Image 1 (cartoon, rainbow, N blue to C red):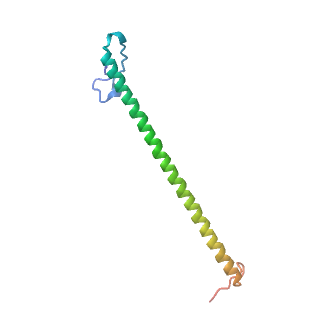
Image 2 (tube, one colour; image 1 turned 180 degrees about the vertical axis):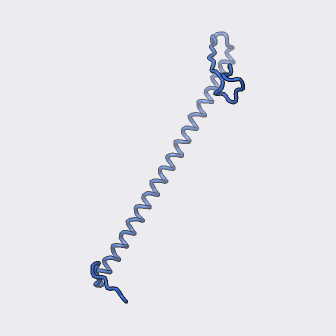
Image 3 (cartoon, helix red, strand yellow; image 1 turned 135 degrees about the vertical axis):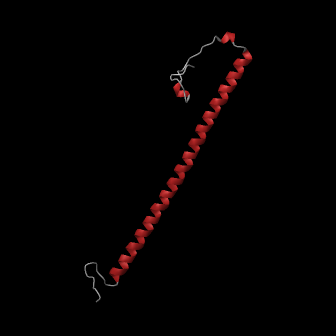
Length: 102
């Protein structure tokens, strides 16, 4: 790889080169090792992706459960407020008819 600048700092400062080989010139054991290594890399990539998907599914499930709890809690609070309003009205206090104590 040839550097693009005088003092390269990272890989992005290099020009990419493409190498090609005739597969008949590569020893069969080296070919098998290459396939084994590339298979391991692919397996690792797929495994990491599957783990990320599993974590996201768990996170989504937890978020959905939390949302359901928030909805139930909100409905319970609304129910308490409504019953308190009904009790106040039943006792004879109207919303427009508030008596102030001095």
